[in-house]
Length: 79
Image 1: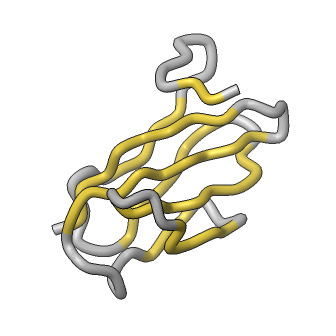
Image 2 (image 1 turned 180 degrees about the horizontal axis):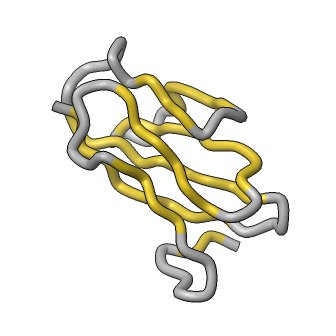
């Protein structure tokens, strides 16, 4: 299930806003996908460090999955 906020499992995406590199911090990280504001998937990774430098400035949604089957969505602003 997609959880916007789950206080039992903290998911952070930082820095926000960012010019290029963002970091994902969540227990049992598995993968992350980045979508633009139109909902198009622009990036998928198994790394907790995500490089947005090749993408336009704007708002992105980062969908983070952990190995326990939880999904978190965080909004990120790229300058």
